[in-house]
Length: 193
Image (cartoon, rainbow, N blue to C red; front, side, top):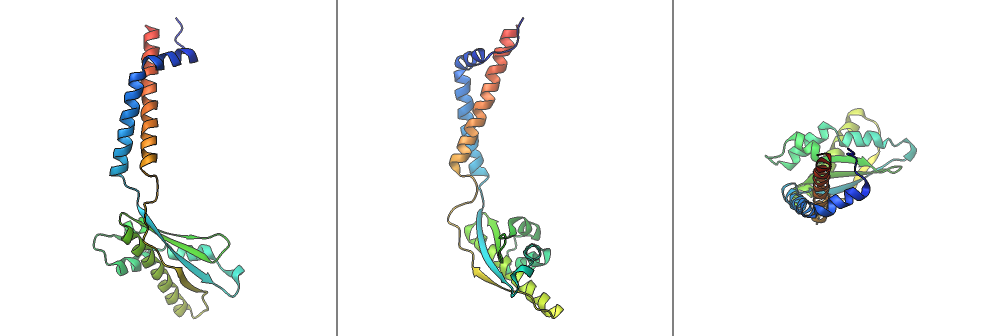
């Protein structure tokens, strides 16, 4: 007895199991919307820092990025934020520094559930980075490239990441795929018996 499904058999099975496909799609859509409500995307704010050097080719932005992402800078930003609910681990996870390729620009980003906290976090990390550079320059008694905030963080107006529509479409698609697998396996089991 043949147990392989041809494409026409597959479409026939889906046509017969349309109610299961519809129910799976609806359930998936509900799960997608519920996930969007339960797992909100964070607000992200970016502070732009310009690092200037008399010799731009000598500027090591990878090192600047590492300094801005260091535990020392994070600890100083944590002190500046004075948020009793924020830990250094959470601050390290929420913040990042990214050098813009072939430039002296550093984007300091911070994500939070609150738009105001996102902006405050990005600015605190940038200021802590500038303070750490100033301390290093005074200790080493060498010329360190000048750096300053070019664009302070703005309070984000919308969340970053996928929105409600993306969650709904993803859930609907996943639900339809699971339902199609169920209908197909039922059809295959029926053909085998």
